[in-house]
Length: 376
Image (cartoon, rainbow, N blue to C red; front, side, top):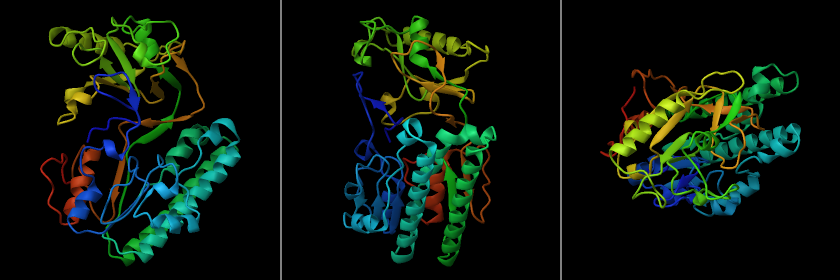
C-alpha cells in the first residue's frame, strides 16, 4: 500500500511527508466491501484523512484538521458536532500541562467516541462496523510506566480508564449480539515502559556512517555526499545509494550488500552506555518482509529494539540515549486479535492475516494482491 510509517520520504529526495489517504496506493478493506455492495461504517482508523468514498459512512482519523473535513458523506459532520465528537485528545496536555487535564480530555474523548459509534450503530444500516480507539495509545504513551510501577496517583487512574473501556466493550458486545454480527477485537501492537529513547542518527554519526555539510543541520537534505546511511522512525535505516538518493555514494550490488552486512553486525552490538545492555534485538532486511509495486520505497534495514528502547531519528541530538516525556512505547511482537466464538487456528499468525479473514467471514472473494491467510 506504499505507507511505511507515520513519516515517509519521497523517492530520490531527503524530504519527508506525513502519509495521508491519497498516499494509500491500494484499496482498503472497507473499499473492497463497498465494491461488493456491503454497507460500511468506519471511524477513526489511521490514514483515513481525507476521507475516501465508501458505500456508507467514513469518519477520518487523528490527522483530520476538523470535523467538517473529516467525514464522508459531508452531512455526517453536523450530527458529530451535535454529539460533541472529538477527533482526538491533545497529547501536548500531558507534555506541557497537567496530567489531570489530559485525563479529563481522554475521558471526554472516549465517551464521545462511543456515544457517536452507538448512535450510528443503532440508526444506520451496516454490514461492517469498524471503530478505532486511539485513546488507549494516548494513555499508554503517557501513563504506562505509572501503572507498571504502581504509582499511587496515576496507577489507579490508568486502571480506571481501562475499566471504562471494558464497560464500553461490554455495550458493543450486547449490540453485536442483537445484530447477529461477528465481533473482532484487535490491536496492531503492544506496549511496554520506555527505559530510554535511542537516537539512531546520533549513533550513525558517531560510528562514521552519517555526516552533514555543517555542524547544525536543520534537515536531512543537508546530508554530506559521503554519508553511507541515515535513519527514519521507527528503526528504519536507508543506505545512501547511488542512483536512488540525491547524494548517494554507495554503489548498488556488492558494495550495497557489504554496507548492509556491516551495519547489521554493528547495530547488533549497540549497547546502553549506562547498563551495557544490548539495544537492538534483530535487524531485518527489507526483502524479508516487503514485496510488490512499492518495494522501492522501503528502507533497506529495519532495526527491532529490545523492549524498553524506543528508536528515534533526530539529527541534532548530542547523546545516544535520553529519557523523554513519553513513558510508554510500542512493542513489535505482541499484537492482539480475538474473534468472538471463533478459534484462531493458525500458528504464528500476522496482522496481515486479519483482512482476508474478515473478507472470508463476510463471503467476499479475496483479491489476488492481498497477502495473508484465513486464520479461523
